Image (cartoon, rainbow, N blue to C red):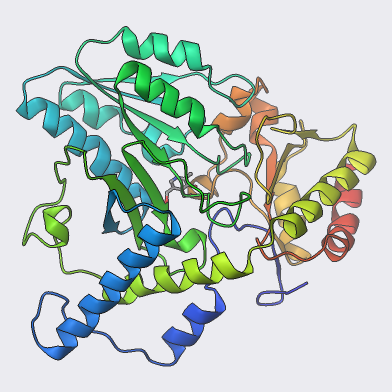
Length: 384
Ligand SMILES: Cc1ncc(COP(=O)(O)O)c(C=O)c1O
């Protein structure tokens, strides 16, 4: 078991440490500071790193029919998709509607205010037991006149539940809706993560979730899409997102994707997750409720459970003192004690939805025994 700063880090869904090739590249002082728009050799060097990253992304996901748009992370990307879509409809003087789900990330759920200011409607659809109902989604979309954008989260950041994108493709075919897929929690968390079901409009990724730098991510945009950029300026990135391009951060995406492609061993980490969860259920069955345990699809790295009416802050403190980093809900909400929307969508009450713990493993976890050994004294003392 690899400790990070002497800690057992079980918060990979919040963010991941840099993978080795990224760390090596950065600490070697790789200086590619030239502006990629400059025509001199330092500019060209930066541009070539960006182009090589685009090639790596397109070949990793077999996505030659998609443009790659770099941004500062998924929050920016989702804002760009939602507002760009709204501007498009406004330009065409068509009514527009944005839909998402109660279990989506707050960067999506919190778009309501802007969509409504722009004159569109915003709906948060309910999930049941962590999943969407295809027929209900089709019905909701067909009931709306005008342009429709809908977000699906491929892998849920809190529960690790994986949605079936083939069903989403059917929804698109039946309704003609524009579809954005939040793929932030995909890389090295799902078997064959690179085999992305293509055919939808947008797929968004964030570098810091898979070992690249923070504040750099990318979105695959179907070349058939009618993209209106949110950020205007000097026309960089085929005018999809203006602003001097970040060759430095972009190259870390390439290095991190290559590393994940080579090193991820689904069976190893999934077995570790299954063993930890089995141990939890055998030892604390009366004290915890695992959320998403019976989902159709689950990722290989996430265990999410409620501790009922016991105070999550005290448990978090005890874990921290024992050198274990977990999370009480989604990373963006850490520190703010409010019920988890994802737990609530499973029907848990406000108190049980507040007292939730997420353990998200490194995708490169080799076995469960040392993790269990470290968790055992804290959980036994606190939960028994
Ligand atoms: C599913 C999901 N979507 C979006 C985001 C936002 O990503 P970023 O940190 O790149 O803005 C996160 C981050 O936790 C996430 O887990």
